[in-house]
Length: 313
Ligand code: GLU
Image 1 (cartoon, helix red, strand yellow):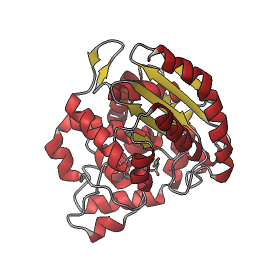
Image 2 (cartoon, rainbow, N blue to C red; image 1 turned 30 degrees about the vertical axis):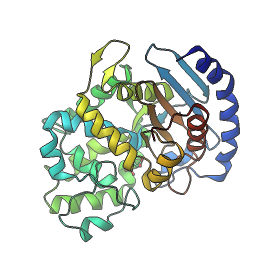
Image 3 (cartoon, rainbow, N blue to C red; image 1 turned 120 degrees about the vertical axis):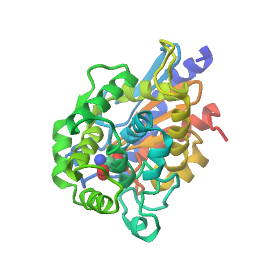
Image 4 (cartoon, rainbow, N blue to C red; image 1 turned 135 degrees about the vertical axis):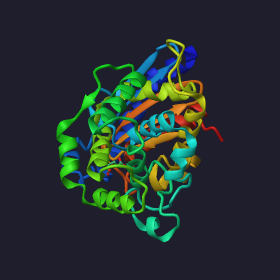
């Protein structure tokens, strides 16, 4: 970060957090996973990290939240590292749907019956079945270790209450997974695949963890602090492209216009975003807008992109 940018961020980030926080009252926490309904509606936090390890945070950046759909970016990357592009894209497509993240509509309407992309639920469930491992716990452990590596946090673990709450209430995801099994998209036992999926969605993080993960993507798979290439560049390119086209649910087009950065949000209110070659960004704000994105988090990213001219377009 140039000094002036750090100074401006330090001075203004808390102000922008407080102005965006006002919007929290207009949204709702996710309730279809009962445990997520308990998240603090008025919380908003952000952490921004650069390649030299400088960090700036504001608001409720220390709040713990579950990765939910943010984890789909990393399960996709690990599946690509385990299998290569040909096998992965035999099971999931590369296109946005325009439907809700948990919709089954196009699975039957459009042939072949493979999920449109790896960031919707059906696609991420298919991806979970591609993670290498002898059994669900080995697959989940590999994924957790991968997230620990990318976040540079060996303590990352599951929020067991959220895991159980999702597993107990996931009728829609279950029906989708059984449909995919019937169409030959899923390998192995459906319940085993779902367990891997629920576990990676329930990994507990804070904004600094997400910013660190985003920083690795911002540097094309390299940890800029150590110089270690953690992910092949090509797979980061694929992941970031999906983040632009499908990362913010049905508001991905609007987000590309208003913010113009790769991003992935989750129903816990987390958002991972990045400025390529510059910053990793982690945001949390559990109050969601009608499209399922953090209402205040999106507003905060809009302000930042506008003030610092971060849009890629
Ligand atoms: N675990 C959530 C689900 O399957 C993830 C949804 C999301 O964050 O978009 O419904």
